[in-house]
Image 1 (cartoon, one colour):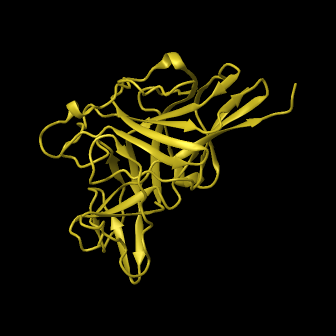
Image 2 (cartoon, rainbow, N blue to C red):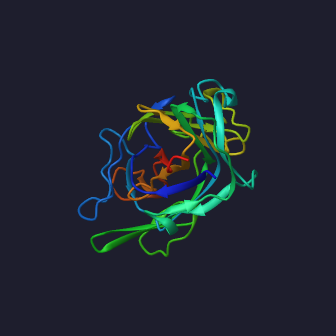
Length: 283
């Protein structure tokens, strides 16, 4: 029987927030610093960002699979080019897990696992909730910055769980539903915001109230699709299909909004990972 696991490990980064708009391209984010300025503001901008390992990173996984073409190249998820390999038992809420509990280890998913047809697949995918519950703090010299339940940061704490909903890849004054071309081991990864029916969130979906991005009521899923330089080969001996999920030094981010290099906000950090297979002994 084919098994499906998540591996929690540090692999790559995707920068969720940017001053650019529309189909954003991947860019890097520096780690938070324990000395000097905890955050270095972007040149010519008021916003600065840094990433760190959270004490909690709870995410819901709905589905995984492999495809022969990018299933999100159109306006909605194209199942005709894909084979679903995992579906969560709870299709409404997904399979939720605090990835910090298994940092650098594996998590066996709860749901239905199905081995795809033998063949070559260049586009594995994972569908998760766009909302991640994060909890974290970071020390810079003698000062510790604590993330609070409302998404702000202070130096008195204690930390609290924050439900961080990603509703755009750019400023909330527009709907930027695609994040493209992040460098990863063995290829690149794209991320797409979608509704619960896996229809893409487009610029025309901008909520229009000044700060709602693609709209929190209709933005419910994040679809990550890898374009592999070396395709995955599913054979008769394939026994394990794994997604390596990155949170070490990437799972949470601080944001500063005033140009003073001091954290003001906390949110889910860069999403990233990669897929691999494990082969058993020939039968």
